Amino acid sequence: MSNASKILKFYQSLSIQAKLPEGVEVMNPYQDKTAFKLSKQFYEKFYGDNDPRTLIFGINPGRFGGGITGVPFTDPVKLEKIGIPNDLTKKVELSANYIYAMIEAYGGPQKFYHQFYITALSPLGFVKDGKNLNYYDIKELQQAVEPFMLQCIREQLDFGVNCARCYCLGEGKNFDYLSAINKRYNFFGEVIPLSHPRFIMQYKRKSVDVYIQDYLRKLT
Image (cartoon, rainbow, N blue to C red; front, side):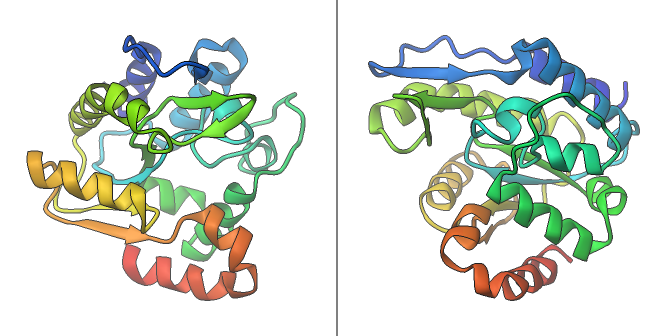
């Protein structure tokens, strides 16, 4: 079974059964036929082999990137640029802009995705009052979905990934949480933090090139 088949099987099986705080809803793009079709094209294009990857953990999908395309940090515009046409509204997502600028600097999608697999602590997203919600924004939400997140990590380790290290998008709460559970369960030898793309694009846009070089240094 190829990595693509394993990944798609994993995404198709995702479901959160825990009782969530009032007003919090789960965003599952893989239950949407269009998003799943697009993600299938993406993973078959870049992961149709059995070579090991190194994991990069985001927080959870947002409404305008992975939440509609099924591919982390990839909006409809970027999806089309990497050879996957789609009829989705061509709305640009800030984090995707940064990630794909970094990927180009790394050597392009083929090279990058052959070495890395971007996922998230929670591969399913959350919304409340029509806005994106991070799993750690509400303490009760984090506690409720922790078993789900731990199970997702364990299942993705079965893809044959590099467990010597992983990378974390976010140097604050996401890194603290991933470091804490890694200390408990020893999933990876080392967790390496990277500045979160949204933080960079919102607050440090003039220094994007500096952050890209920091990524390249740490990833290589």
